[in-house]
Image (tube, rainbow, N blue to C red; front, side):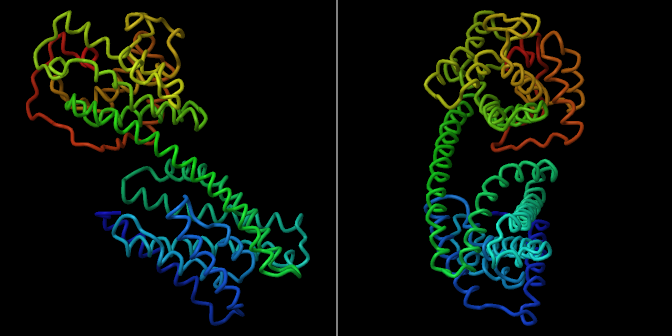
Length: 435
């Protein structure tokens, strides 16, 4: 949140004010303070371990509090852990206030939902079949509140479309929170049983194991991202005019894949494919990539080797999967006039057909040494014109549809030079020839 925009700070302030409103009725409800204190201590300790050693947050205890306590008391549980949690990036105070406010609001809403559906009445007798419905509804509400708050923050701070951000956050968050919700329900049932809170603490052991597995998964993903980032940075250093291009092609590829209804795993692979589609330029002489004048036929043939170089460079990176086929074939054309192998129609892998459209779109809408950026509408019209000859019409239609609906908001992670008066491109310098 470094350099957080003013509107995002207002969002944090509104969330904090809402949390205070949720806590206001504390003096009017009967609060089991020892339960609140024990759960708050468990949550605070779990947060320190989770954020430093594992990944995610200790939602099991928060949901157990929502099932056991009145809403204002349940909203107290996350406060100590959130306000004193480990913060890796500044501003630390704003981040801590944000975590405390969003957790407080989510737990309060979950406890209110659980109470409204008669969940507390089913808890003492451990009537699990009847307890599952209010508990499940409480988990859904807990997830929805967190997603709306986080989605609103991303939309305000980074200018991303709220609907798309919330949809992605909800899909990623629901499954882990359902697991935490079941563990929280077991904790609450045991807490109210004759065996008391000590038996409830036994539930935390399998939760710790699941944390460890989740942490290994996230570490592996972080290693994947670091590998990709290193390759992309190497390409950006070598070919400065395409700086930021790789990330934007990855974003456009992901938008096309999601619009086509692909599963999340494949969408991620296609994002990798878009980001790494030009990694083969590491094997092309720098003087050719930075040449301002027209390319000779021999120089063009050398540059056209970059898909094969990219395929070889990524050969040993197993997690890329079909992304390697996209790297190799993203310059093939539907009519067979592309390279390196002149494949026709559906001979071209689907992943390559996605990346080809994303690559051409960003090439047309970005400033280059040989051409000025075109407006988005003009670029989309050019893609429509070339659909069926250069590009797969299905991929073009998907990109046009998603941009018409959500707009094009490229995530730029590097500065891109924008020459004030770029030279007019010659026939050999068209974007299609130099991408």
